[in-house]
Length: 345
Image (tube, rainbow, N blue to C red):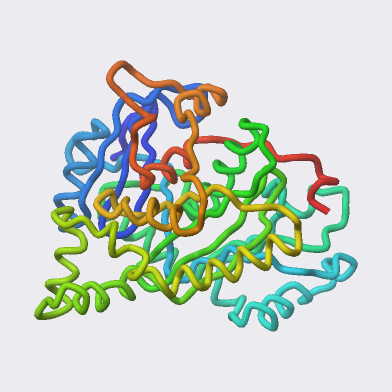
């Protein structure tokens, strides 16, 4: 029923495309044997592709580490009264009051800002934490969807959290102290995070996503309807670079406000940007945002970074020229060690 566990499979499901990596194991050290991008359409066709790629016979399931992105995912800084953490019901009520969600309807995990560690393992009381989670119904629906794709999630992670861990690991490897602006530009909204080598400094959501750009494309190019604009936007047949600042004007306004506040409060300049989840055909969007914000696109020697964790590649697998959309899958493979407990206080 299940594929051989002598191999590893990592599967990152975001938007209309899934990314896969077949490896020689699930825990480092291992070798990346092959990478594959899979359009998400008919579940039966996706399952056939997955099984062929993973070497699973018949209608069996490929065991995998899966990264998913629930629409209602939550990655939020939260100020707490650490002395009340042991009080029954304190954290749930605090989450309900502060984040305006129903904790009973969510699967939630509070972790430290610097390490992503369980709060109970920390020796130093925390003034702020990172609350991570998603609506439970969304997680169940995504699990069922993965099963339809011929996958059995040996590990299911919210991809955003794995990405945070991976990017912080990259910042530590580079030994730089400059903050990094991480944007997850989705269909309806954009998650905005500021990361440093020591922790997560900003988490917020902006009600502006890809769908907000489509009417502007229609208007600017005088197209007959939004569907025509959408097809052109994702077709890779038109250079939107020159139009980029106009299409992202609202998002840029929000970003500039957050960046300005952060820089005034901390005295640190944010000079690098990373946009994950963007389809390869709209990779120009990351370059446009970086140019307007006066930042550089976050760059890392992916092969060297993975090698530092015992992850290498087979002949023919190239990592350093991958589009930004692959960042989250690469981050899903690693295991990250944080800073000291005291740094999280």
